[in-house]
Length: 298
Length: 327
Image 1 (cartoon, one colour):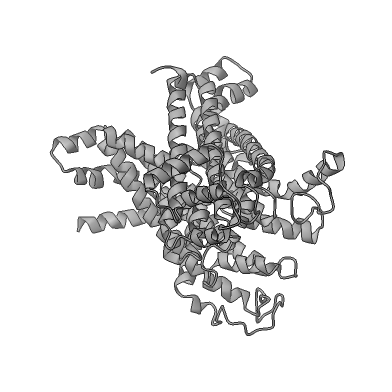
Image 2: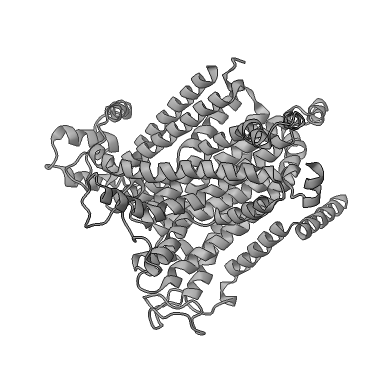
């Protein structure tokens, strides 16, 4: 039962961290709320987001808190319904590209030699080729990329930054005494990597997950905005596509275009705030200092 | 020297990969949509140009993949990028040259400006740790950098162009203006550039501020900075010439790494503002199924980014003696 106690200790420590760090707390609360909306959209709005059944182009009202589109759809329901795709894309792409980063970055550092040379070169090349134009070209051929296709494209273009960072950290840990001791004991490579090498890298891995998730949200909404996603799906980027194509801003329906953007910004900010907080965990030098302490130092 | 040789080597490898990716993308796609495009060309284009396009897109060729590849690389290196379908019968190279100055002016200037200003703000924020600048700016820009670039552009259009009428709505210059090197035309161009430039600046500056601040915090704690203080050097001199210079090095590498990201955002900003640069042209090419133009633009943007990264490597070598030593 020792692992249970250890897990309990971890949870408690996470609780303390959230209570002390307001940025992390704000980020987690927003993320949790969005996750609930993404899983149970019908709790928040009973309306069919695609149904064109209302008076088109009306502003704020009790019946339509964010007005309606020029097709007569309820904007609020669309924002609620669109949550799912953005949140899921963030989590799935974040998870998959983090796994890819860990596998490539850590094996490059751990195996060393020519394998490291080849993997590092590969990582660097993928890193410097501008991904967004590449994704545009790929999705232009694929026409209306489906959800999973978009996930795949984003994963294959989004892993390199993390792999590079993780490789550097793994390299710095590789020759520590405790790792050498584990190898001298005759532990298998898998044991050394999973039990000894990866745990101290947790905060960097989490930071990478958050960064990749943020990248995925912004890139996916950008692609959907220019009409390269599935334009009939319910998502924030697609809402922006329809709003832009029907000149929502110029025809007096700014909420149609502004609301989904604010939703993307809220999700993005939650991820960025958590990322910022994790940076401070990984690098204690960055933690906020009290003003009195600064004065005493200088 | 060895450092630079290695970087030139890397530049060449990256260029080759980009060229190769560009060659294989249309061949790997299901149903090769370029075939439909080719059918439109037949009979309108001279046979030599048609053959070059067939080689580039893998349509109707009886050549082996290897010989098509060699021919494609040769064509590209000679600047034979094919013929644009949406600007028919103009060659792709001519069409691209029209858009290039707009992007260089808008994206180039606002990116460099964002980097310089952001780096300076980050350095000062870390120098006055816990001060007003340090407590307000980093969290603000963390949030702003999570906004989609294009949406910030939409917001600006709505606020400053449609509601307040301070700036023009779209385009690189007024439709009534005639492009010429006159004061009125230059002024017109500048007024049109304000909103898109400010969009790129606002959304990219946060990244530079944060990384510079974080580097600077580490550097300021070093002994040689304490030594400089003990010697009684002017704080301004320690800030820029001692701490700042060293903290800038990782930021320069960061500049290289983030450039692709900034360019991605800039493509969408150009699209939102209908700004006549490469990004807007790329998305127009996608819409018009102008595959030769689209692929050449991808290649050109990639080459531009790779050269900018190479330049930042050269700057790193100039600033950091350690990279120049032969060790």
